[in-house]
Length: 419
Image (tube, rainbow, N blue to C red; front, side, top):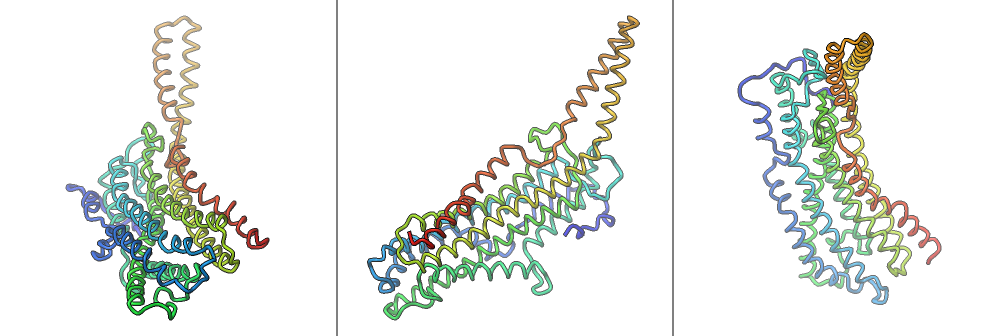
């Protein structure tokens, strides 16, 4: 993962900025049809929501006794996924297209350089951009290739994207029997359903399966982006900008990107959490149905919550390691400054004791300058975010966490005790 860039073979590039050219051609979703479907996903889901709100209740008549108290809840089950997946797709697209801008901001700040480049000490001088450019250009091109895998069976990323599609389709088909519909719904319905309604349901189901695949391919790109952030932190070292206002050594955009990826999964985890709470509060008198729905939403919550944690903490940790490497390189310079402060302080005391006011004043001016430099450099950031970003991340995980710690145990107790 971190060895794909052959740093030793890169050569400096001068003239036209190759990084700007690579960023201009960067496209996280290259297939034109997939890009069109992803960008219009919201409107298609709204149309499906309106259709399902009408045809699903018609197809369900006769499946359950009317006194179950579950009919309205089942309509909510049918239409609610459309809203959440549409919201998730919008957030995912904004994050994917922000990846290129984030790399551009890091390039503009000149905070990255290849780990194998030891020609300068970036602890005391900025990296040589002409030497960084070919390596960062290669990374951008490889990032685009990783987000858009090709080569079929020879490419592991292609298999990973296929596994995402298969998993999402399985979750789609498992949703309906968990909610009380027949296995294979909406392609398989009861005998009481009219032919015209069967045709609508089959077409509706085919569109939903296709859009589920689109959602899976975009979700795969989010996970791949998190993995590529790890590779970025392993391929490059960082030059910390100690006075940068983001309080993260200039790496704040990278921390924000990690947070945004994880926040999408955190928002997705709100959906099963909300339904676990609803199932606990709703008067469902069918224990088997309650069990199926609880298991389904518990699995969904576990998957989304795990992805929310993994896509934040793992990339952030590797970026932290890159920043820690920079801290270790800068520490000797800070120690030298500390020793200089100690020496100058002693000289000021000696000059004051012999009443050499002029020398004492000169030494005091030097001491103040060294102390000011040390104070400005002593606080070495080690994480690519400040406290506010971390508080926002915790906020996006508190609600999903409540589904694990509060509603799921309560539902288990409800099923066991029957009350």
